[in-house]
Figure 1 (cartoon, one colour):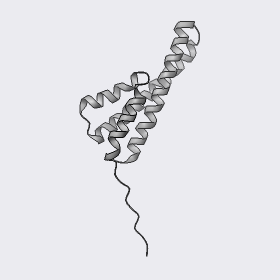
Figure 2 (cartoon, rainbow, N blue to C red):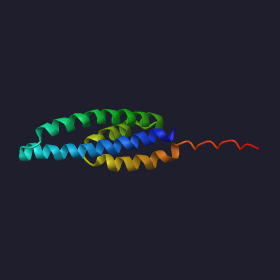
Figure 3 (cartoon, rainbow, N blue to C red):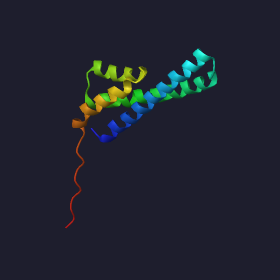
Figure 4 (tube, one colour):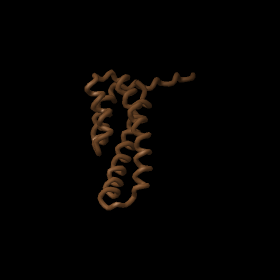
Amino acid sequence: MKRSVLTRYRVMAYITATMLLVLCTSMIFKYGFDKGADATMIISQIHGVLFIIYLIFAFDLGQKARWPFGRLLWVLVSGTIPTAAFFVERKVVRDVEPLIEAPEAAPASA
């Protein structure tokens, strides 16, 4: 497996988790204080698009790492639970790091 597969998953995991926290905060303002309805609509749409990209990258990583269905499902669902993606991402990195191919050494010119 290439490192880029893990890197793009990590980037999207952090972005999705951060956007979910921003969305939760905006919803608190919308429903709790009756402020920011327009901002909540925009944030929710942005989060939705980013979450779809996260699902694609997480699924790709899971297929290449040959995860069982339960583990893949947990990683996919972690993007819907505030702060869960931060913790799941760390565990995924620890488990996937050994599967990454070592870069081939460039041939020395003599």
